[in-house]
Structures are given as structure tokens and as C-alpha cells.
Length: 421
Image (cartoon, rainbow, N blue to C red; front, side):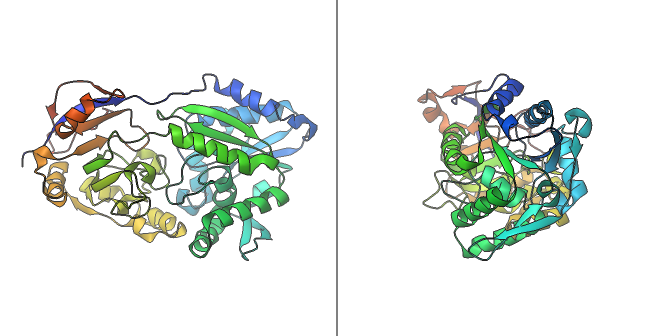
């Protein structure tokens, strides 16, 4: 089969960036005058989630040092629902993999899957909260604010979700995802958040917004009384700054890697255009991709392939790298079992492409609109097929980095990644 020629293209995005992470964290926290509430010797639980947040070790370390400077005793709580196989050891390993260890942070990591039921929402849903965090004198809810991969609204993924799913642990995540099937997402997330803010001694939040280059664009310390309004404002910025594919109409999207450190669904549905339907764009999706081929899992995802079920094709090495138990736990807890389904797979990437191109419609492979990306988090440099060339040349936000070249395969018949490792 003759494959299309590809162009290497660089995208130009807005690029706000925090240059001195520790200084900005300290400035933001100092603006809240927390020393008026925190007494020497009091304990402070600081959340760390499972997403691959840029500079999360620097941000967390700076939060720890601020409270140590107030004479408090901070400790870190892994806050990530059912991730890490739904075990305390697995969740501790995830944060340590981000460079957040007791040695580097200078404080304890207290990881547990035990929760305390602190309240009940008006819907009759029990409000679960991490046992260690509940026992602290104060709680800092830290997390990235960004568009959610499933839910749409003024609040999506951020501080409220950290109170809902992160600190709710596996017990909370299970019941909340079930409740969301019967009730509105916004109602559940805000009612649980209201209970947590009222019952669980939350002293502040630290909201993180990233730019399209996976860099820290903004850090905001948020007092409890403005959690709702401030998170809405941060989500607007996150949507403006997030990365995107260079074109909305795609016959075949090749993704070099997916993983939980990239997105909650392995590949961000806000990027690939499958937020409302696993295998077809809807009228609500901006991006319309006909066929997706996933080439590998990230090392950091540790076999958790949640989201791979949204792709139509993969290869043998990816299928064999899936930890079926961990993936199933995550998908079922999230209320979306098909996310764990394994796509059609073939031994090599070349075989995958030979079988994927016939599924895109009438265009012959050399004329197909094909995009190859590293993952849905890193989209500054991508490969696009020659079918896009005229459009690329008309766009000031796209730069061609070289002449058209064939899709590159190694000796085993597997594609070279967009960015060499």
C-alpha cells in the first residue's frame, strides 16, 4: 500500500508562563495571610493528584515550605480516586514517580484508601473524605484546572474534582460516578464540594493552569469562600490556552502514546473530538476524527490503558502492555467500561495502517488527511499529510519545518515517533 507523504509542522500557541515557580507559589499563598489561621505545630494535609502536571514537584515543595515557615507540620496526601490500582501503595508510587518523596519534600507522605463519611448531599449521596486529610488541622486542595474529558460545564476538572474524586478515594469515586449517571454533574460536584468546604477544614486551594506547551502558565491561591467563582474563571483561561490539533477534519489520527499522566482518558477527548461518543464525533465536537491508531502506552501510566477503547486500532506491543486489572478498575470506577476495551490490533504499525486506511472512506491513502502526534498533551510539533499542505501554507500559526517525506518505519515495520526519544 502506498502511504501519504508527511510534513513536519510546528504550531504557534499563546504562551503565558510562570518563570519562577517557588516564588510564585510563595507569593500567592502569602497573599492569603494564612499565618492568621495556622498555629505552630498544627498539621496541614496537601493533596497531590495522579495527572502529569508540569512542575508538580516544585509546586508541592513550595507549598510544603510555606507551611513549614508558619511553624506547621505539613504532610502529603495522594488524592487520585482509584488510580494506582486502587491501592495505597500504588498511589504512593505514583507521586514518588513525580519526584515527590519524603526526602525531596522534607515531610511525610500519608497514603491510605480509607475514607470518612463526613456528610450527605441533598441527593442522598454520602460524602467520602480521605482519612488522613480529615484528621489534619488544615487541608490544602492543590490541582490543575482544565477541561474535563467527559463532563461539560462551568466547573469541569480542577479543585472541585479534587475534593470529589481525589480526596474521595476509591470509595468516593465509585459512588460519585454512579450518582453522575442519575444526576447532573454540576449539581453533584458542587454539592460535594460545598460539604467538603464546610466539614473538612480546607484552608485554601492552589489552582494550576497550563499553557499549550505543557508548561505552568498560572498559579492561583484560592480562599475557600471563592472556590466556586475562581475555578470558573480559571477554567475559561485553561480552555483558551489548551493545545489542539492543527486541523479539525482528520481521516486518520496516529497517536504515539496514551496514558493517565497525559489525560484521565489516556488521550484528551477535548483534543481528539470524542467527548460525547467513543467512536464518532458529534455536533458538539469541534474536532472530527474518523479513525484513531494508538501506538503505545507511556511508561508513567504503568499499564493503565484507560481510554484505549476509544481507538479503533492498536498494535501487539500496546495490547500486551495493558494491565487489564488496573485498567478495568479505573474504567469501571469511572462508570465507563468501554474505555478499557482493546481495539483491533496487528503485529506491526505497517500492518495496522494497511488495515486502517480502508476504514476512512473514499480517499486513497496518498490523499488522506492524516495527522501523527506524540500525545494529546504535546502538540507543538506534529506530522501532517501532504493533503493539508495548501491549508498549512495559508496559516500564520503553522510553520513547515522541512520538505514532505514518507512515513518512516524501522526495521521491524513500526513507525518512528514524532519526537525521537
